[in-house]
Length: 158
Image: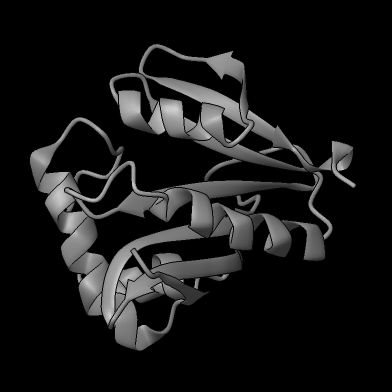
């Protein structure tokens, strides 16, 4: 698999919607319940007011995944200096390194933005998501009835 990891653009929004909407329709792995349209995808991910970064994994013009990183925001309060990550990989391509390659770019963007930690809050039934973030070095720091919050500590990196 030859991927290009690059910043998302508004032109990517239709493919990002299709990818995320398929995950929403299947259910069980995302907190999102309402399908996305292009405008909402752009405002929530591609050009969010809180965005640190939003990268896509592109293979020959096809978006196979995307990952966003946002600063703390009023609707999801976090400690000062923390970011909030969200990762979505096209169904059928999990386990092929898409998320890991996206995370390399996101981690660099987080360091460049002087963040000290990244939060990943994942639904408990999202076994794949929990395993992915653990593999990337995130550790559990809080559990609620439906989700677990994991932290990636950027302050310990070189």
